Amino acid sequence: MLDPVGVRDITRLGSLAGARRSEDQNAWLVQRDDDTREAVEHRLDVFEETTAPVIDRYRDHEGFVEIDGEQPPEAVCEDIEDAIRSAGE
Image (cartoon, rainbow, N blue to C red):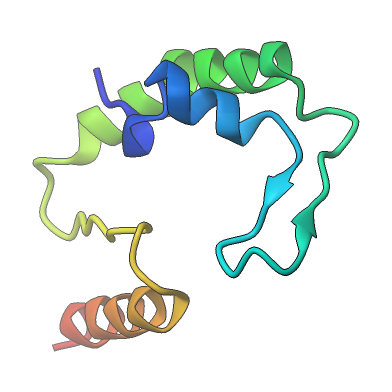
């Protein structure tokens, strides 16, 4: 089953569900009310039950494009634009 960005790793899951310092250590990232450990685990369960099977079903179909969302935003946008251009050719 697809594991989005490996978030089932308990250490990483802990950092997703809590206030923490930003990478530059000068600002705090604020935890939303719905970003509890339980809420994050539930969202991941829903993803695995509903979204991952759709991705797996269409992965081998022509035109399916997988974009690495772990890249910087500019690179993600560039990959999306490249995929759209390629689809139009």
